[in-house]
Image 1 (cartoon, rainbow, N blue to C red):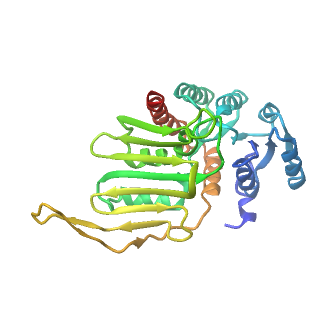
Image 2 (image 1 turned 180 degrees about the vertical axis):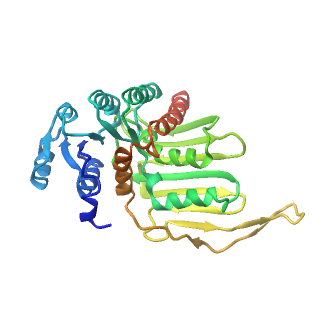
Image 3 (image 1 turned 180 degrees about the horizontal axis):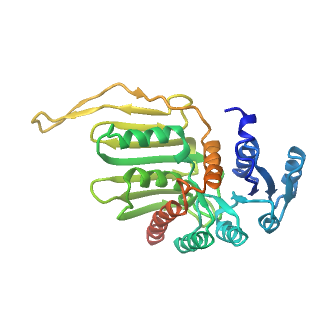
Length: 333
């Protein structure tokens, strides 16, 4: 689909973006390309000068409340620090706006519940930015799991690491882990019954820089999530081990992002099993930008009055897992 056709698809929806920094600039770009960007808010006046220059005719403000109260804006996109999410989403609902909120929805389960109650009371849409659900490789992975290609899921693990972009408002668990936890809940189709987390604070601040979280689901499924912003290299890997096949999603790979392995473990009445390795099978996936697909889903749900794939309830489930992991972290400090 070219940009000209995209610009006529959602012409009845007017979107304001709050937060134009590290991730917000990407949201501003895709909503602008979709022809719905109506307003931009950021507290950084120098940054706003750049946006004013590049987006003539758009409403600009350094005060979020000005954008939220603007009558010709239908939906608010929130890409600010997580500590501000609750108040901004609440204000948006109080002013009759649909909301797309970047992860995490809030920093406590209670605040997440309150936002969902408010969205339902006001009959306003709430979508959480769990972008992996809109990634073509993850969409394909979920299809393969649902079709039984991997057999029964036994184990899942993810590694999301990088160097830099260190935050002070939330720890690495709340910053990096929500994406992978969200996918794990979707694949397991149930909530974990046990969550244990450990981590370490290595920089001169009061939040964990590295965490390892273990999840135990009803039945046989277990999982772990490793996140760090003190890693010497970038890694974004998600592995699913089934009793038939294993799948690896590696978002750092330019082409072969989803690969299947049909390794076999043969016992043959022996005490020591024999490993029969198979060649990696690259699974073709569509080439599309996950962020733009996520933005289009948000707009489609507004136009068609449908429930988003990553709605408030889905976001709340992720919050509950994060909350359990955070309690475990505190106990281990």
